[in-house]
Length: 452
Ligand code: PLP
Image (cartoon, rainbow, N blue to C red):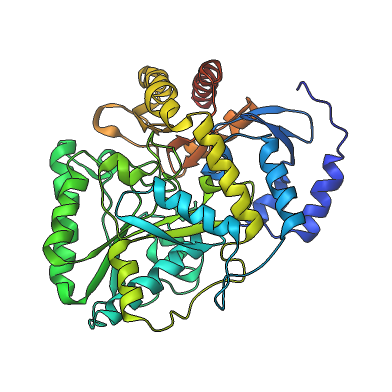
């Protein structure tokens, strides 16, 4: 605890308990235990109100790609607020930051994707996608192409459409989701569901689940398939190498649109600008958010293929969709400065050629730990599968929340890791240095030792 900041933690927790309804929280446990108050941050570190310094192995919620304390982003926001704090892009208007941002993103995206629709978050981006997909097929004269196929355990946000597209059962159980016209297939999660197959066999098998679903529903009724390149919130589920090529073949065979949710993988996390480039995909839609502003301002978007944008243009007719804050000028100015910083510091190349391989090699050293059944990762994403017995991948009994224990111990030990069931995951800021990776991995090992 090298920072002694005079915050009254107890008072803050009392007020928090009385007034603040937290997202994604069990309010009973939260009220009993009190929230940890995070008060400042710099580089890859955050500090709590008791002065504890913690390495943020999750980049906030997978979003502070550029790291904390980048004052150029603050300056960009300040300048834009003074120049033009708000104006909309409805009713045939636009403004320079949003135009420049759309152009910049179009240049970074795969070559066939050049137009961007802006939103305020990843969830709004996926709501937008759902409406755009159905609008597209209606314009094409095939409105019966309506069903969107997602995956069990996929995460596409928390709004009604986002949570419906996602495959999180606990979310579906609250509020009668999914909405009609959404179907889910199994995920390509070899460690958890691969049984006796090899990863390569399992990748093909998981991809063919898509084909069976298309044939069951009828190809003339399926509009699109939505997936994260690597499932993030589902536990950093990295598909076997055979998975995406097979998915591509199936989509082409039945003329079905591909939505690649880049909210986590976008903006450098895999060592490419987008996860689609990492896997050689040609999506029709790429929802984005998070790393787009490195979380300094809320902003999301949907990058759209020329095929889809061209159809909107040719057919005409208003698309009745948009948000007051679509393309917000201050958020756009911050996103632009964030992208400039990523470019100037060559962070995507750094992840691909330097810090990504360095982290993956260091992460693999945890494989010898008795609790670890598998270590895996791509770029600056990593996961550890915790097991009771390595042979046969035997899990802990569900009563023992081993992931939760490991997470709590890691945080009190100075490292934020996240637990998804018994899977521990990391996604640090792209600016992390070699010595900070060493610290991350040794603190992760300490947390595992403490958990045993
Ligand atoms: N899509 C993916 C892949 C995500 O990981 C998330 C958030 O974690 C979202 C969408 C939703 O984004 P937001 O929380 O900004 O609404």
